[in-house]
Structure formats: structure tokens, C-alpha cells
Image (tube, rainbow, N blue to C red; front, top):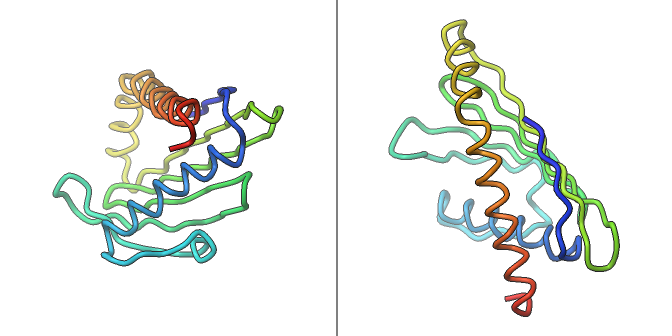
Length: 142
């Protein structure tokens, strides 16, 4: 899935908000605080909705332009890459690219069906998350 959006907030601010969220997620999963400087290459386990654990690896952190990670679940491999491009002092273009590779033929079929039904919902969810970041910026960067 590919997603592209230009938003009204500075590149560094939006990048920092994404990384802040990542650091919070890691802290919740491993009960330890990290900082952005040690993220690249970091790997941790995360249990999602009480299910089997997934392994998440931070593949790239290039401040303030790229955040990429991969996830291995019992059923497949997923990669996500966020790119942040400075359009102006107050605008950022965001590119999000997600891909998946299933571990079994049955999962390939399941992923195809789910993608057909869920892609629009996923894009709406991303849009809502970005909207919240922009609102946060407008309210003074809190």
C-alpha cells in the first residue's frame, strides 16, 4: 500500500512526533526507555491484541527524513517505510509505503482478500493520525 500526503506542519516536528510514538511503543513493550539515536537496528518483541508475539526491527532512522521498520509475525513479513520531505518551512510531504510477504499460500490468499477490504480503512486511519499531529502543531507543538 502506498500513501502520500502533504500536511501543514514542519518536517522536523512531524518526524519527531512519529519517533516519539515509536519510542513510547518500545517502552511499553520492553519496559525500558530508549532514545532516537539508538533506534536503527534495534529489535524487540511485541504482543498485539493478546496474540502471538511479533518481532519488530527498526531498519532505518535518518533524522528528519526516513523511518523504516520491518515486522515478522507468525504468518508473514511486513515492511513499512515513512519518508518526510520538506516542502516549505510549514509544509511536509509524507510518503508511506507498506508491503507484505506471506509465509504460506493460504496466507497469500487471506492477505489479498483483507487488503481489498481494509486498504481504505487503513488509509483513513493514517490520515486521522496525521491530522492529529497537525492539530497538535497548530496548538503550539504540545
